[in-house]
Image (cartoon, rainbow, N blue to C red):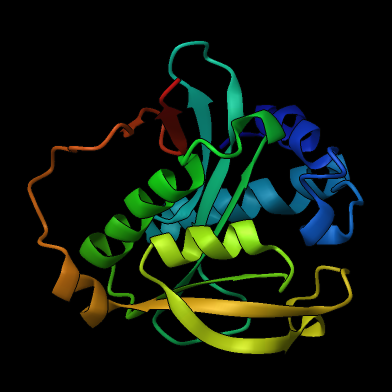
Length: 194
């Protein structure tokens, strides 16, 4: 994730359907991406090894979206928040599930987090299905959006995966990856299958 990525993220966030359950369809201003999103991600990479990973199609090299594992602003607990956003043409391919699975593995193997959580609008059934496939369970309903200060009014649902539940179902393996994705240099880049 670098300042040069503003155009990629801005293009993704300019799609009203992509942003439907995030901001009611409103795009994220490039200034917010340049002044807040990218610096926050870079800071979290430096300080905690977490942040925003941009994802590219392995065959075409085309940007498909991002996944983000971040420290929540509203909590001092040992937990991380998972987010993902993909271009519409990349939906229904299992990419959000697969990339998020890789980040959850990183969270529970390489950090001391006790919980990974994700939230979405109650009507965003597709995103909730991704969370369920990740092994997350419903943790809270009707969260006031004011708690998230993202400017979108409404309520959210929150799903969570606890460290002990993840470890019960996963045996950590060596440094090699067995999935279709791999992290590549520089940090913050993920290649996705075609």
